[in-house]
Amino acid sequence: MLIRAACAQYMRMKLEQPTFQPSDPRRAREAKEAFHDAVRDLVVQAVGAGWREAEAAMALADAADDYVMFLAQRPQRNTVAANSNGR
Image (cartoon, rainbow, N blue to C red; front, side, top):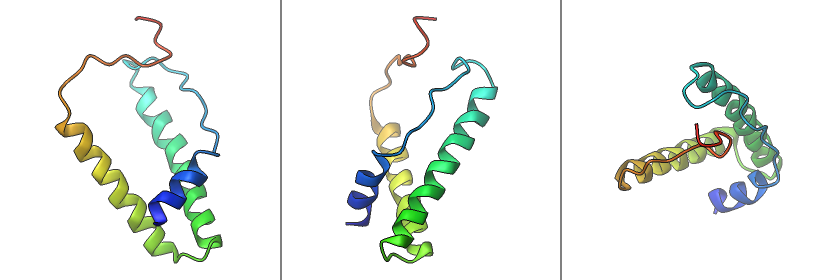
């Protein structure tokens, strides 16, 4: 239930488009900063809705872990970032 509510709130957050190409090592740092802020904002919203900070953080960590496992189990595909323009 928390994850469903969190996802609905997250969809309203604005994430900036990456400024670096997927092969640029600075892109990982940029992603970490962008998602760090988004997660913090989501936890703050969850606390405002009545969830404890620790349970919100753990639920988000579990959801992220589940998604990583989902990605690991998918067949490998040659994916290209939307902003790479075929590079």
